[in-house]
Amino acid sequence: MTEVITDVLAGLGYRAVAGPEVETEWFSFDALNMDERHAARAPDRTFHVADPAAPGRRSGLVLRACTAPAQVRAMLGGAPPLRVVCTGRVFRPGPADATHSPVFNQVGGLAVDEGLTMADLTRTLDLFAAAVFGEGTPTRLRPHRSARTDPSAGVDVACVVCGVSGRTAGDATGNGTPDDARGTLPANPRESAPGSRRKGIPGSLPANPTEGAPGGAPVTPCGTCGGGGWIGWGGCGMVHPQVLAACGIDPHRYGAFTFGMGVERTLMLRHGLKDMRDVVGGDIRFALALDEFPPRSVRSPARAAVTAVGGRDDVSALLRQAVPNARAVPEAETIPGPRTFPEADRPRSLRTRVGHALAEAGYVETPGPPFVGDAAWDALGLPPGDPRRTALRLVNPLDPRQPALRTTLLPALLSALALNLRRGSRDPALFEQGTVFLPLPGAGAPPSPPAGRRPTDDQLDALEAALPAQPHHLAVVLTGESAWADAADAARTAAHVMGAHLTARPAEYVPWLPGRCVELLIGETVLGHAGELHPNAARTLGLPAETGTMEIDLTVMERLTGREPL
Image 1 (cartoon, rainbow, N blue to C red):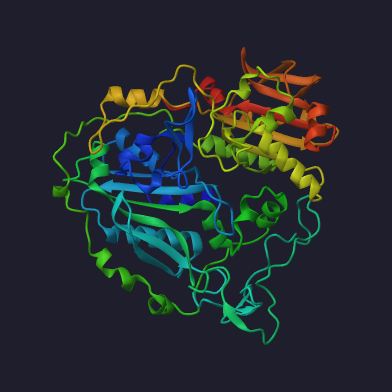
Image 2: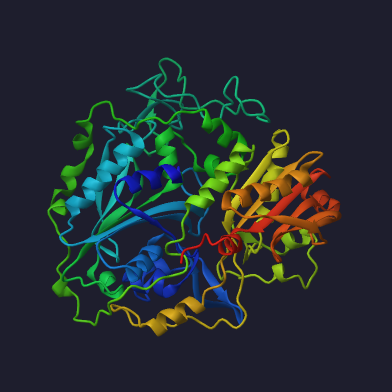
């Protein structure tokens, strides 16, 4: 879905950018016009990284709650006109439910140019929705308040179950068939398609409860949208002049709009899914079955229903508003000149190709949460002094047993492997590409530049120096007689895509079994390790004795092969 969205926006002229997942408070709040009392800073809205010298005290670093900090970096790094899109993981405290997850992917778009208005934004959203969901997709805007945008709006898409009617025919929970479209919903993508080309998919999952409502079933409020007929897709608005000034862009000359949507929620809307936990839960039966499941358009029975239920007419005043009055911004020095950030323009195409190559080899991508605890290190058999145990910790973890951020991809990936084996998958092969978080010794607290103006280069350097190292890793896990050798081959597949020559030599490194462990190198630089998981670790994690694993640092590989941006 991320690739679909990125391709759609690339067709509209948007350039892909990236940014760190652990970010400073200045990029996350101050640059976005959020003062010290803003609700977004609260521990129930943002994960705060603890100060290593004073556990329990905030360090000035956070897990990003949206992709807007990457947009700030793009504005600091380039002169208008700009059109950029960032897709990446974001993090918000709170329990998982049918429509929310504490870890999810978000797409954030930004356009900066002279004369942009809310009408330009709505036209962009219309094109975006039509390309992703199909022509005629009902959408609406709701007036909304946001510190970083003014005017602001929420973006809704018609409910995938009831088609904006707000009613279903089914059981008392509202799990049934739309009362105006009985029998039109496709089969649940979680069911295994007959004749699937994939191997290792067990029997069908439970049938879609929205299908096959018995004749004469009572009409009840839709359990998916709560009877409202709409599901929130994202948010949007015109970038506040204070934000532009903080990024060194003249708000008297330029306007800008921004929008953000959850990738998983977009996938749910596109395919008619009801529960986000199916998407993010790590069960490969869902991912494999989804390959066989065509996207569906989200359409209402009648296009006129959009206005009847409360469509764009409700926000006609918003559409007539242009950029907020720049005279409201205090006269402040704007320091011109682009600033290049390490992650701002990192190309994603090579990493995407690595993922495609592994998928063609039979691996299924299974991203996991970044939260770990001492139990994860103990299960792997890491000794007390192992540097991987030195991890950033959160002031407000979701689970007090998992207060730290991962320094390796293996704990979550091995847990996903165990989950799929318990659910009947035969010889699953999983992979993940993702960020790990490595504290930098001696890193100081980030500065707090004044709001409403661009920081100096020295201040930006200090903000950057306060961040932990956040390399991009690749890991695979699989079972079978030759799993340990296959794991090493997966690293060679990634190296081939990168144009690198990878070599291997025997090594001993926890959690691999001595004698069946190799270190993987380019020249004399060790990128990672591959081999058979130590039997003690396998036993603790409930895995077969012959479990193969591999993990390498793709960021180092990019640097050594000259594939990183100049």
